Structure formats: structure tokens, C-alpha cells
Image (cartoon, rainbow, N blue to C red; front, side):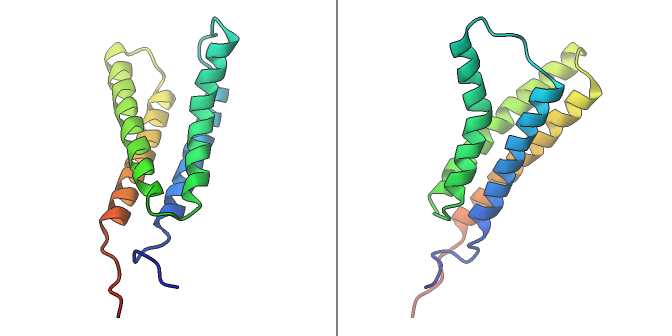
Length: 130
């Protein structure tokens, strides 16, 4: 059975990046704890988005389906926009530690890698059938 696109490892590489983002979220939660939430429901929503979304996307990408790559591109685009906004706010406010800024840059690069991998995988042409 032939693959519908030449590089059939692209979704799996994207899944590895998503699991890396999940690990980064776990590390961030340990070393840079956020402010306490007013409600338990608010805490649940924030943690579900922070941990559940990259986990769900990584598992979804492990299916190897071509359509999952566009979801990875969308997730990476939103994540990169948030990383850039956080970085600019941190630099102009000069309140955050350098290690936090480096962490933001690292997650921004991982989100950019999701965009590059997914975009490249989506724009590859299908193998000709004979």
C-alpha cells in the first residue's frame, strides 16, 4: 500500500513536537506556577487546554492521517502568536526572568516547527499512480 504523500513520517514528527510541547507545559507548570484561580472550574479549563490540547493533538497526529496536519498547523499558528505576544509583553515590561524568556523562545520555535512540518507535508504532491 502506497502512502498518499511522499513523506509519511511528517505526522509522526509533528506528534513528537506536540509531545515536546506537552512536556514543556509540564515543566512550565512546575517552575513557573501561575496565579491561583478563583474557581475550581476555571482551573480545570486552563489545565485542560494547557495539557489536554497538545496531548490530544499528538495522539491524533499518531493516526498518520493527512488531515490531522492542518490541525497541527492551526495549533502551531495560534501557539506561535501567543508566544510572540507573551515575549513582547515580557521584554517591554522587564519583569520576567531570563530563563522564562528563553522558555518562551523555545516553545515559539517548537510551534514554528509545527507550522513548517505541517505546511511542508500538506504541500507535497501525491505520488503518481501507474
